[in-house]
Image 1 (cartoon, rainbow, N blue to C red):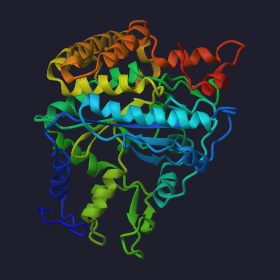
Image 2 (image 1 turned 180 degrees about the vertical axis):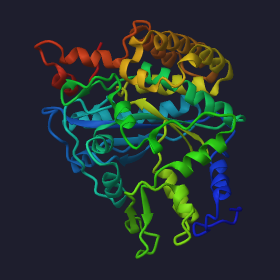
Image 3 (image 1 turned 120 degrees about the vertical axis):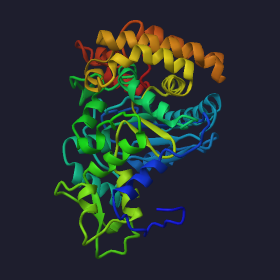
Length: 415
């Protein structure tokens, strides 16, 4: 596992896994941010109808900000903006989101800024080998929901000069940020019992790969144990050449990577370990940067607030100190945050302190006055009132009006 290691390098024992795990915390010491936005796509005239992937791709315009376009298995559109400074990254990705919104409007489509499809059942459109394996391993109903019906805001941050500190912050702040940005309370037109139904779906999947990595003083050691103890999703078929994704087959016997390591018949390689790591989905995942994965998708005009607050509280030392003083007692409250959001008094109080800390820090990070105003407006509307975005969605299905389809057709902006 030296610098000369190749994909065919054999993983001999747990020490090689640890070498790999610690490399995941070796990255840029800077303060860049990269944001990945997932959006459900709806037909403006008939939001209950599935939109074919071909129609989405045909409607996409050129993107002036240079975002990478990919798709999730259910046809969710993902825009991954170029990493950079906070104001620069938001400006580039915003330009692309706005271009897509305009083009989609002309094509009769709309971006759904919500974390769990509130109207349609899951339906898979992509049949790539990786997704075939994932579908068999994760099963139904929650595997199908995760793959086809969920959408998120993923905030990627540099590891900085003290990777362990940012790793710890990203975890300790998690429940508070889940609560503040909870935005997925509906499933097939009805309340699902959770303010973040998306987070609830993740909690019902294989917990060896979706639970949070334990926070300790040594993130490399913690990630090593997580890699070893997570169940294998797939292994290379011995009849294949090991290079094509189609040579992977699902592992359904509950064995872990640690079990595979102890098997002398088919010792794993670095390629096997690397692939295994890509099948793990903890709330925070190290990849030479930190992937913060626990945030529900937001309205196309609101996501910069989500990205700015998260990035600021993880990377700015002064803001982090103030935020953690309030959020620390809420550490580990993932389920409560997903179920109750800001209706839980401790989470609401911590969120208020976190937003105050972020607002004080944003000008230091070069945030534009407009972005600061957007964060302040979100705090006033949702945090101070204790009404996360999910509360507005619930209002749409209460009473006889049934306003959810109209809300989706109008791009989901509640004023």
